[in-house]
Amino acid sequence: MTFDHASPPLARALAEHGYGAPTPVQAAVLRPEAEGRDILVSAQTGSGKTVAFGLAMASDLIGAGERVPDSGAPLGLVIAPTRELALQVAQELRWLYAQAGARVVACVGGMNPHAERRALAAGAEIVVGTPGRLRDHLERGALDLSRLATAALDEADEMLDMGFREDLEFILDATPETRRTLLFSATMPKSIVALAKKYQRNALRIEAAGGETGHADIDYRAVRVDPRETEKVVINLLRFFDSPTAIVFCNTRESSRHLQAMLQERGFTAALLSGELGQHERNLSIQALRDGRARVCVATDVAARGLDLPTVGLVIHADLPHDAEALQHRSGRTGRAGRKGVSVLLVAPKARRRAENLLAEAKVVPDWQAPPSAEDIGKLDRERMARDAAFSDEPNEEENEIAAALLAEHGAEKCAAALARLLRARLPEAEEVSDPGHAPDFSGGKAPRAGRQPLTGSVWFRLDIGRERNADPKWMLPMLCRKGGVTRADIGAIRIFPKDSKVEIAGPAAESFLKNMRRPGGDAVRVERIGSGGEDARDAGDWKGSKPHKGGKKGKF
Picture (tube, rainbow, N blue to C red):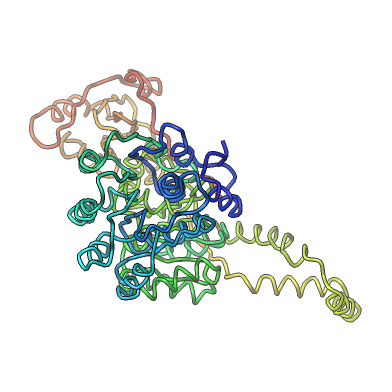
């Protein structure tokens, strides 16, 4: 499908900006059944939804014509949860509607309200803003919504989570009942359904969120790290992937400031996005990332809300996200609108269980890997140098003369060595890092037995706890000793499966172990005997569908 069904001036603007085929959500709003109707769209960040609601609004703003009429008051309104997102939406709609002659005005907190009021008074066909600032302009009489044809709510679930329900209802109540309402939300909780029921009529439901398994265009990786080497691993990841733009997420302002300063010292062009920055400073950071003066953005979750940088190919979670929603939001900064991206979580041994729970909740299956080594990066550097633009660009006459003089004086080998030094000097040095991942914390399978010989005459027991209940040898071993009344010497292998686990107990201690484990009180774990003796017993009596939990890949990048 192409943009043939889009309004002609918008279709031309899309072609000029390199848009070939619409994303699923863009295609959905262009279908005949969506024209003129209220729509309720489930769309994840990065799905191309800004262009989607821009396309959906066109029938009300332009109709069959070529230009948006001068109505004397706004015809289109877009409400977004944050300043950054509202400014980005306004920027997108400006080029999308440029050939239709639409004036787009942004009204957001942190900007000069007097300048916004002057822009509104001068005339605007489309207004984009945050709930609080839009309500302020309405209450002051600076914003006239009496002729509004379409209202679009972007990331509606986030606006409700941020406490903007009252402001949203105030704004929508000030619009004509005949207006069309486009509601875009990543999730559909009861609060969103209630809002849609109150302000939409016969809405068409569009499912374009790409499911609940994380973004299809994002390659998730979990990298094992020694916590003392976190910053070194961040450096190596940035060097390994060499993305045009990368975002590194930290959980606190202090850690983001520290990491940004460290990266700058190491030769990276790094910008900071932290909640402590003023709007002007944040705008400068975003602009530096957009125009390529900075290639790395170090950010906190709050500061990166709604951040849309089309060239982001890599997201690094230097600190683990607090929950699955934060993981998906962070990761959604890459892999946008059909582009591929990589999301890397740095996981220290002690944080493995929390990381696994987080990934499972987000329905993400990552590749577990060692951090890229200095040797890995060195090999890539040599390949990249051979493809450097310096070799592909045609030299001019003066450059040919200089090259001939250098060759005559130094010879080809010395000239090539000098060029290699210059190319390498532009690159930050890679770090020597270790891989803690061969410890049991990352194995995901059965626990090692510290070199102990297999128990003779052993008995195997099944426990009704597995990976899905966060079973882990670290806490299972002391629990078995305490509740089962055995010593560590009496316990052999511990094999953990998704829904259950198997434990090998020395024969002489088996009966008392079973009796003690079945006593009431303490840890509520159901235990049953499944076999005894020899290697064959280790795989006997498997419950149907229970397979050993296999850990992630241990290979390098």
